[in-house]
Image 1: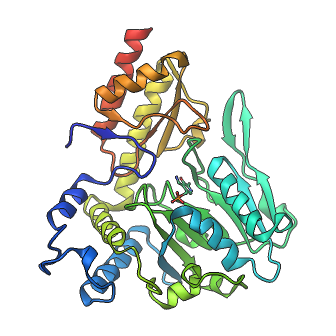
Image 2: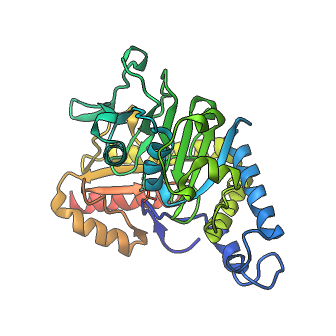
Image 3: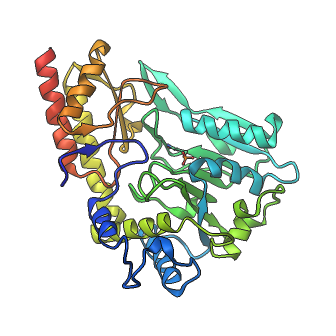
Length: 363
Ligand code: PMP
């Protein structure tokens, strides 16, 4: 293990085993004498890679046969746009649930494209005794003719995660950018799942879309062909040249995840990592976290120093101890430890030891 632990929210650390393998085969992939970056995306070798990647992803997430898996350009935000353009033709309307920064950005984009009047929103976060918590509305009692309801399962900036399944009379469209494959989910509960790759999948720029077959019958707006779900599906995600190196790394991450026991094993590890860190925050009066226990993110642990005059010193000393990228998002401040699948338990243990020592020294 390298001397540093990288807690960046994204682009985030990738599994070290994957990085080492990629380094080894960078200039000679599969015995071809050239890099995977330098071959045709339509070559039989690359098609074998993409076929295997989809197979392994389907296994890992237990994706039912009536769902298509698309590898698309543009990261998470491209899907903010795509769900609107693909599903809201013919004056369609959609309902958006707001829980923090990213769900709000998705709404902003949806309104930009479809118009304010086509998008309704419900704020699902309330503050109870100073703690943010999610209160899901009974969507069956909401009046409206919506093509889908959109939510963000893990608010990367705010450190708020929604573990409950959204029960809805309309198809559920979920932004899983920062939580995909971190715990088991029932894919059949969703109309569409999307995720930008740069946390639990691979390098940035790529996004993964898992879409139920019947969703593709919804009327769409005119849009760019490379962002059209049906065209992407009909062309095996190769209507134009895909980001091949990112796809290759994603494929390697899927194989790694399978080799370490799959999503179930990862869920257990992620829960252990998050519990360890939240326990440290709760036990030491030096630190605090403003999210109710049931909605604390297992991927992005946000916390504040009670004395925020010590923030810069905390970050500098952490950096010197090999614990990097702990600064919270500029909008919310404080600290954030992003502990995605690739972060080993040892990294969190080291962070906890550092936090204890820092608190002792400055209390
Ligand atoms: N959704 C969520 C939950 C995210 O965390 C992010 C990025 N951090 C995005 C969307 C946007 O992804 P991108 O920058 O790839 O467009």
